[in-house]
Length: 438
Image (cartoon, rainbow, N blue to C red; front, side, top):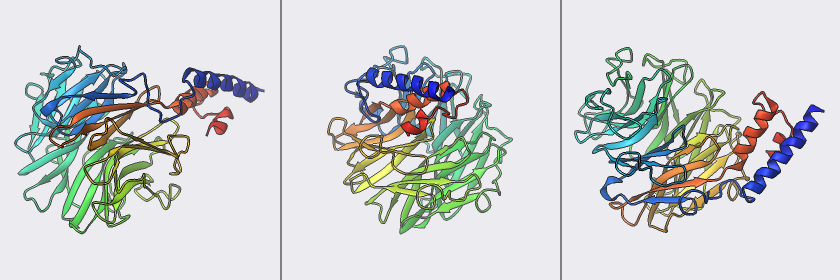
């Protein structure tokens, strides 16, 4: 009886949602955001390469480019209470951002001296002078260092990952951890720093912190220009390699001749998902999504032997970021086009087993042209608490004059899942409308 009541009530809610959303399908552009679901910010030399996006607790959207921070209201307009009319010039090549629980904004990248740079801003866009020196910290490991990934731990410590080298021919993965005030955390590695070599050249492009405090980084490893593999390393909370993971804490994955990872996420069950590129050359390939068990072994229940490759329709396609929905579906964003540089935004959604989610877009795929510019791509994505998908990227006719592009997509299934889970009371989707929906 309870299940029948639950089914009927949830069905009525479902029908109400569909009426309220005008029969919108998952992956449709959200026309309540910007113009037709798209926002373009002309920012001249401030833009450079678009880094990442994060959603504040109040629904505002923060985006970092190489030289500036931008904050948008939930409708896509620039938030004039932030910096100067919604913009903050940083003067640094920042790639990644993360939000603290107190609303402060942490960014990381590379400064003009080619060393790791981390800065923290207050919620109004001013530099947080309680962090480092005047709000900024510079960290040198070797002659050339960079930060490509960033996370804030639950204890407030800040972790960045990237690469370090003394020559142009080889590099090591670099991981640095800071205390919440910006000082190096000397309980991590050697003086707060860890370097790791797998092959002659190694780069970290993404990181995630597990609930047990272990740190997982992923990127690329190679010995020559003729091939590369996905690289993944897991560290204990003190910076030591976690020898229970892969071989001595390291995992490499080969799919085709050229493989690399750009994004990582940890599922609620501890499985690790990475996304990036696979191809027989560096000019022709597609999305690669790989799932690993907690010990670093490939999860054979996902795709084919733990690996999913996806062609969207272009010659060159690469995934830049991923996020996992509350229902376990995996959303991946990147680009599709005829070359490494030209193309349009591409978003793909997968079911938990790695199959394309045909309820999303067309056969699980959505492509979006911002204004028809030559260079359009997605760099990062975030999922709002209401399930809507926010993608940040760039658009422009030349690489020297790119503008910020932010796109938001509707996502009714995530809303329905939340409704059903709350009805059931145990978060498990016990009403059998959940099985009908999926």
